[in-house]
Image 1: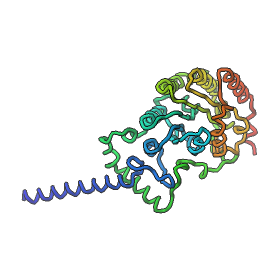
Image 2 (image 1 turned 60 degrees about the horizontal axis):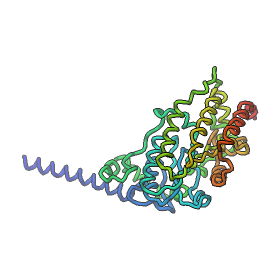
Image 3 (image 1 turned 180 degrees about the horizontal axis):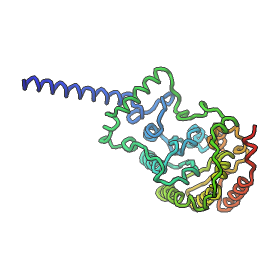
Length: 347
């Protein structure tokens, strides 16, 4: 009886180990997050930035890191290769939090000699308290410690994603590395789409005080200045993307316009004194923001807009300086406060 029980236990253990070995072997071979193998630049299955960007930061050779929220997804890295004469990797995180950006940047600096960081500094995430920001990056992927890889090799979720990647490759549903996580080819951009993607809020009873975003902005900018001070030999190119005129309608109706401009002024005053920081502002590009045909909703612009922004960055045409920052932001403030928004919503 005891001998039969031992044989049964040994068989059960052997079967369990075999399943684990098969699972780990499958994950290692398919490697959906590129932890062990470099992605095929000609065609991969891209489906989760927070997990797959770690593999890109690990495997690619680069001097420039392009980073930001979903508004940074619609860029092709080779644009910056051409415009800055550099090598670029893109690591965007939809609705990203500053802790996530810091974790990814730290890993990039560990892996490569990063000479430039191009960062989409969205006002929306500057105004968000850190406690409300997502913090979802898997730490075991953003390091080179082999002892915590069990969370990758023996994960049911990762195994399922490996199966998904295999199935998509079998169907030929892959895209090149340069197109990873781009949505310009899947979304449409028109006045109708922009309006349909914008949920116009009811007017607020009272406007927010100017300092409503002050604490969150200070907390987030402290993270950003920490990057600048920790990496004084790296050039940080921050840019404010061109939110459409619908965004300013939203700010007006929520009573947040003055608070948002206080945030923008504070951002400029904080970053401009740093020698290794540039701040470019596309918020006041009237040719873009007033043409709703450029947008899929109230903030997400088409690839033709992001290409023009990438091309403009090196020349500095939209760069804020200590001499022009206040004037430009005040002029934009005056414009959005006095703009007639109602015709936008008429047939």
